[in-house]
Length: 248
Image 1 (cartoon, helix red, strand yellow):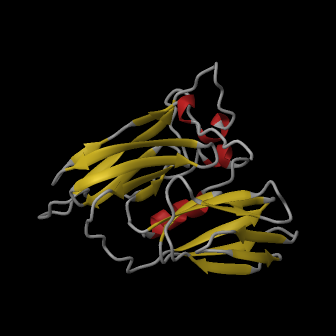
Image 2 (tube, one colour; image 1 turned 120 degrees about the horizontal axis):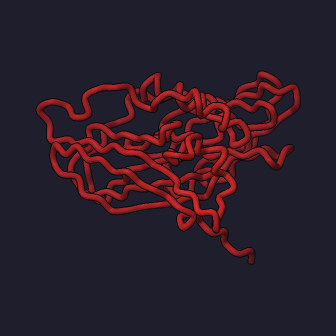
């Protein structure tokens, strides 16, 4: 994972501060050739947008759609999930990602990492905070005073539509999501809603989108052929808002 992408993850913000940051977020990927010369690998790029419906308002739109004319959607996680066996390059250079607790918010509120990556949690507030995750493979419950640090390595992947949800036991409104993948084909959209995958082996995939904070979901099966340079622009609407499961 590149230093630029790590910087992108660090620049994210919870929904209360996202509107301010959207105007300054850079693109997720540096400009570079999409397909390695002499290989059969392909590329896929595109944008994720949101089309509003006045009859079905999405209350998070003002936080994640900076330009209402284009509808570009920020902080959506896009994943290209293989549906067949392909050769996955190893994670030889695990990333270190920072998640701070500031002004009673996780910053950023959404990150996407690969198995083996480490996430460093810290607390910039004077108040005592906590980082809690309940999951069979990755469970922790740690108190953090000001400037204290807890580092966790995520060793197991999760499904795009079931990311880890972080909380603080002392402040119930604090929340964040961690998407963990066992492959490198994932991205977090920036202010322009763009995403890009490079060096994709030919095969069949599930293209999946999940905006955890706004409960938006979308998926579609796609086929990638050798040396393809695919462009896929996805428009989400209120129909893509995931309904809450009824309480038992």
